[in-house]
Length: 329
Image 1 (cartoon, rainbow, N blue to C red):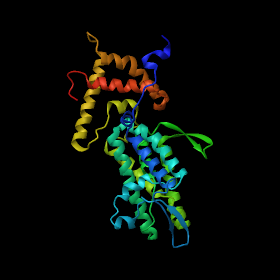
Image 2: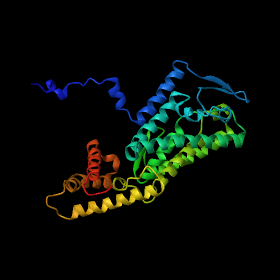
Image 3: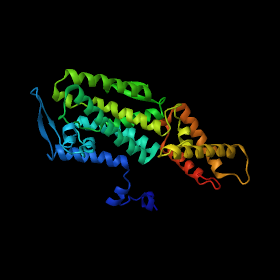
Image 4: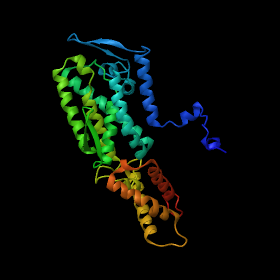
């Protein structure tokens, strides 16, 4: 029998329902943004030219949020604006950030925390931008659009968890520069404040309407504060600490109880590793033989150096730990 005659080598016929079941929260958000953009710009569903008092004008797709729209009772625009973009470059930049940062936040914190950060960052970002525009320029009607506040919130959340991890940034998309995540986050925030002030006071209204830099700032601060609430932001995060001290999705007393149970689990694991048992503990064997070398690799080369197999090994070990008999987790 040839290799490709075997059942597991034949192409699998996946139904549309199978594809839907394979989608996670990040996939749904990205596809929702793409579908809205295609509907508005390729099929002309929703959008109009907006004129300003200084004579400038710009095309504004429907779904943006403004003080005027909220005052008129269109409260849903506080959510819809996160899925509306003004150009191909606009949506492309936002979705690239959301995808590459969001997939790590989703994998590390879970769906609930990922969605909380995404939508709370978007809501607070919109509030910050609308308030500053209204206070500084009396602008009540210009809507804001785009998911950049959500992306900034996710990026700041990742920077809080792994401040020391290095990433490669491309200056002008050409010159590679290695920066720590926290340093990169501070640079992005500084640029947002500087550009926000510049566009607010020195650009015409049409150009200022296409940028929402104070929304970036509000989204980033939301991501930072949310991670502080669930127990991050103290000493630099490592994958080992994340694995052993996974935060609870709730707050207050329940959060402290969950952390205490995880600390007891860590102590029990250390005993399992140091104390010989007969018969041997399979979980301890997994930790000793498979997980320890991976954690050493993370400490030397960073989490980005892990292969997909190594990430799956860590997840499998975590599940095995939770099934250890006699432990009340």
